[in-house]
Length: 330
Image (tube, rainbow, N blue to C red; front, side, top):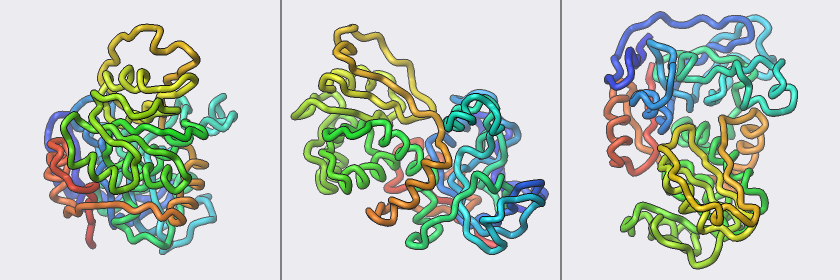
């Protein structure tokens, strides 16, 4: 089968003919139709995340059809079913985290497109327990970005509790998806972009934000919560200063540059900083139930599999107008 393979960080992916995988016990063999490109893929390629499996097939926003089912695989899937494969690919089910409904923190967890093979390929195998049925409302390209930008964004959003005034720092893929849910649920949305990025600010206002400005500005009202989607550490104390008493800053990325020091007074009055790690299957079930009711809409640009490097380069340079999605034909 064809696959785009990372041999070493900071090098381009290479198109290769590699053996078609076979499903082991509890696994599904999936013929991939689409795989969205995530900022985490960039972090892996650019050497910002440690110890990836090498060589590695990237990709963890995978949409495809079940072609074969391994022994003892979850009976909720049948051959021909459409499935989604997310970042969290396996947990041990036995550790203190798994037994306390925090499987996203499992010490032995494995991750699709990072420590196990991903979806920049014609076929992949995945643990059936961690695959999702996908809403019929979406086609394969439309639904692919929901499998990470949507899911991790949703977990970040839920960590803000019932915050009425919600700030989003960075207005990329995840923020755009979660903004739609926040507006659907009646939140007041405040969007922070790169200073001077009036185009994105206007787009946020058109979507329904009550305020949009640069990350160097203070909002028109103090916030009950803020999600920092941009991987820029200095945004954390900036968001903290924008909070009302008792507010929370949620860091929604897997990687972030160093957070600079800040006065304790900015944290005082029971303000909180927290991070989000991975996702749980419950997050996925809740999100895929909610998304088509909003309905959450995705904006995408498609690239054939062999142009994965082009998609990554354009993502890195900020030249995409939507989520890059690799389309994999037969």
